[in-house]
Length: 68
View (cartoon, rainbow, N blue to C red):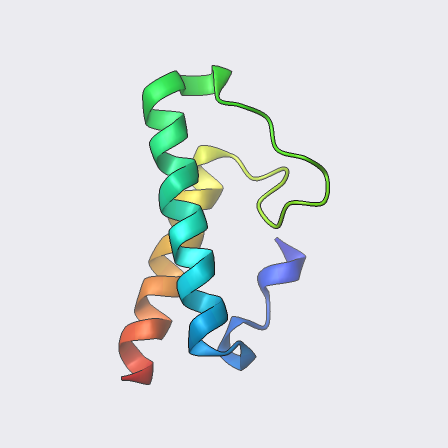
């Protein structure tokens, strides 16, 4: 998750987009389990497991709340 180390520097719009992507990815995991559609290598969430997505979503949500 190296590409998400500097989330504090991201714009609120970019973080909201990431939050939406994470919510969609988690919904996919919930519906399909481990058979969830694999992402393209160019996708921001490529290679993240369900647990990684949950952890990152908590971090993003916390940062968005603190920016308000």
